[in-house]
Length: 376
Image (tube, rainbow, N blue to C red; front, side):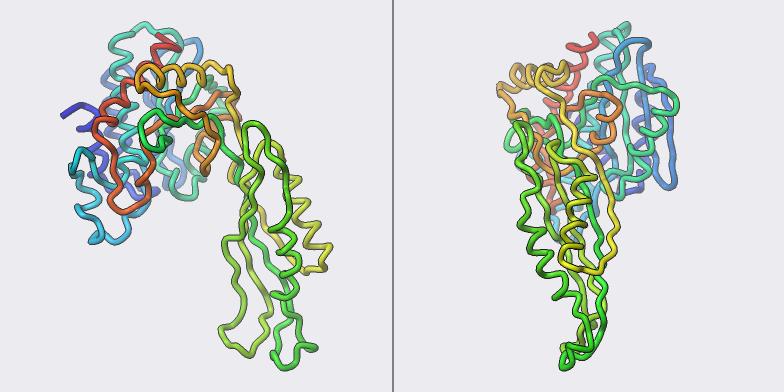
């Protein structure tokens, strides 16, 4: 087997359900320290983060990943134990195989190979890992970036190892992501008997017209790089469970996935204006998970990753801004170009998560070649 296969298996065996790193980061730190990387452990709350760098002055290329995984779900639903790597039909199975212990292992192997072949490379290469990406993502890369700003740390290019491919390694890269703005809405009413509605105020009825307008609103038209902004209601809860009681309050959750054609402040203001126009008595708490970001065409990192996929994978990759969010949203505001390149995402977060072994073996060469093109 290969070095990347062996390391991926070692990582899968560690039950690093978010935010527990389960020893993944010390294992990686020890390997990189042996080949000359400077190691910085950054712990915030219950979250472990690792920043490993090699080189000196000049541009910095950082690889970004996470060692935490989502829970396995019922283990008896898996064909093999989720935290025991298993090979079937040319695929490596286990929780995190694709998201994203395979990518993390490939980054480590690529960096080991790169500094061995180019000990005097220009600039710096770095690896930033967290154990808080799949969870609340408060004490992970978000907090590390605050530290970077405080000490003047700069990143010029960032490759995120999130599983980006659709059907084959290299067929899609992410060159940006939409922003994510969430709301927790409370609508106040007056509880009462359903037979005497004149003595009560039903918050469900009060919200319904406003909600219809919110869900029908055209927030923007998108642009050449992003689709139009999407607003989705994910939960509504009201009532006591009895069919003869008008509820006194209603709670609703909704989320905007928004493009660079909109701003978070505008989305907040327009939403609240609609609620007020309909006379809704409400309180709303907003949470901005991340602003949208884009590495534009012509950017050195974007052009390099596209060329590497063409040459090593034989594919002209789709350059997408779709999907959810990634920790790249925290790195982009530092002024970095950010591109996501990783394995096929077909089984991530599912039972029997897996990665194609041929593509796993190929992934370090993609990452190493990006290093060589930018810093070799």
